[in-house]
Length: 319
Length: 253
Image (cartoon, rainbow over all chains, first blue to last red; front, side):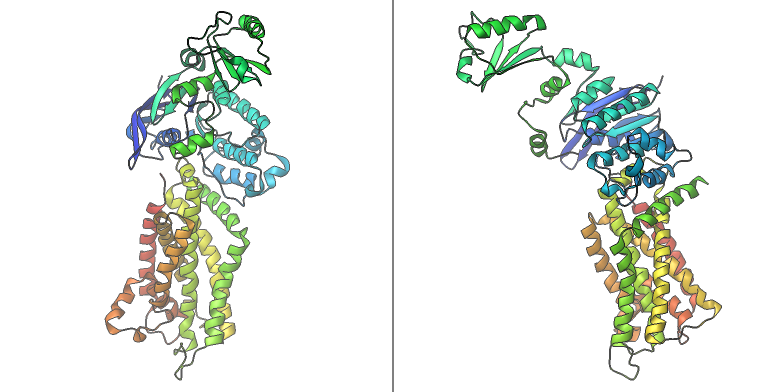
């Protein structure tokens, strides 16, 4: 069966900046593919390559055809910084974009599916909240009931409840056979929705696989994080060469935070007892299984302390 | 049917979007009105010599209409293109069945409707304020295709400006830089006789010249040019600029 989406050796440069450097992926029909990576990694450029809105080197196909030749009614796109006419209501916007297709879903049904109804459907777009605006944009991408749906950071600015509602909607679409290509900065979102995940870093696809496979391969081990107000009490723990006969665990300590690696649920007691026997008074204990965020940090080489803004400014923003 | 459906959907959206920007609506109609008041009522025509306008009042009706035919579509389409680019709307539209020419046609039709109304107001105002008599013959109705085709022509040019300029500020600056010389060097308010002989052939390079000559031919009995040849030129230029403008509408990054 032909893949819904395929890219082979895709390259794209903007002046001296390489946005995509030989990216190859394929997405099966009806699957949800999550694409993650730092700002500026090339996610949006890959979406544009797959939707045919930018010219690239290499080959790209959507539903077995060149993006320029594929039937437009089969594609739905939410661009990253999409902003429709400010002084139209959501219902009017859905009528506008729905009117571009021979057949389109009922605007009210689509708006209700993304949680925009009642008074909100009759307000000008510019008066909606940030989260409502983004939901209207998602609705616009859905109005033609596409076979392949491209969503470039669809839940940015949406509150947790709205995000979960949107996730349920996307799960329903995927269950119904819609292929979804999703970019996101939310690892929880990708982990929940995606059948397969691709990690893009500096224009290169550094890992692709099922979330569980990637976590097993790159996520590291489960760990226990111990926080204390008395950083001195952690002296010797986690130091190379220190006497740790009474604390036989692999650990690292920084600024009053001790991270004990490879701790399973059954070993938590042992760690706690060992800490208490050394007189460590801790404020909190957090046991954490590796997840996609750990995979992200491992593959992109970023640290926990690096905020999105830091990353954005360091890499020059999205492209 | 689908093509009509697409154009209609885009037209209705653009129409509502325009009508709800009150300042844009106000100035679209205020701008030509103020031109008539300044030139027609304050400066006035002084055919006996002196003053800025030395021709009979009816001569300048074509100039007044040229103001709306030129400025409004140029700046409106240019800034619409810039606004669409900033909101990634062209990127979205590129994945829909709407073509670039359909998009520009829908936007042009909105401009034809808006500027048609403004032109009607301006015509009535110029008759009322300056006391000019406009011939009431069937030929006078040719003003309608001159205005409509002129608007389409400058919508095409506006799309090109929108493509070249990288922001709404850039569009405004570029539109003014192009429109101002065109307005005064297209046989609108300045007669060819007031210009150096060596420059007069250049008047034929301005598309607005043919709009002004054509409108004058049907609104000013002493006009020295015929309407239909100018209408033909305006129609050909409108088709050419529309095609170039549609090609210039961005579809990729």
